[in-house]
Image 1: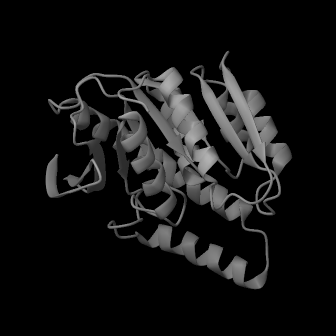
Image 2: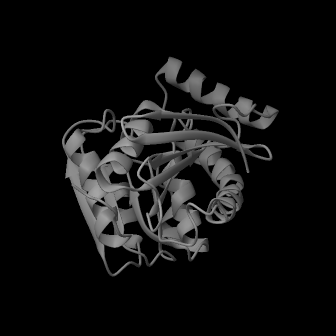
Length: 249
């Protein structure tokens, strides 16, 4: 892991890094990270590691709860070039949106392709982060929306180091529901009840499918973006309860 830049503001250190072809960013408290929980954050489809909502959640978790937070660009997102197949999927989504046609089926196929590639990248990133002396082998949580949900469900099912996960809106299919049945860690799932793109019945089915003995469902009015501040803090408190916290106010 090579750090390429470092800035400090309002008690938070932000470091950008490269790990082979993986591009990422790490936020940590200036007061130190010994024993601090590590949160992995997966961005939405079409976004990147410094998407505004993701950054807001990361800074809140670091400044208020003392978390360390990491995000990486999914394949073909952010600072990573798209391959031809990814570009075809992206173009198909844009055409469907412009024509007022449903995008769910296209997004689901694209998200599965991305997530299957992203899971081993997250595992490589986690290996490298935990090898850093200021992080170590402490507790790990995961949070994500849309593409970040698909990636997170597959990651949580495969990776025993993930101890809790908070998910937002996502396009749901039978394969994702089947994968959720292999997830047993504490889960928080947030549904934007009035979002026209995301089927609430499918969201409830996904929540039901999680094999976790501890899980909570949060339904709120409105769409999936922007995320209200109270929802952002709810997720931070969920991680504080289930992953641990350092210096919470």
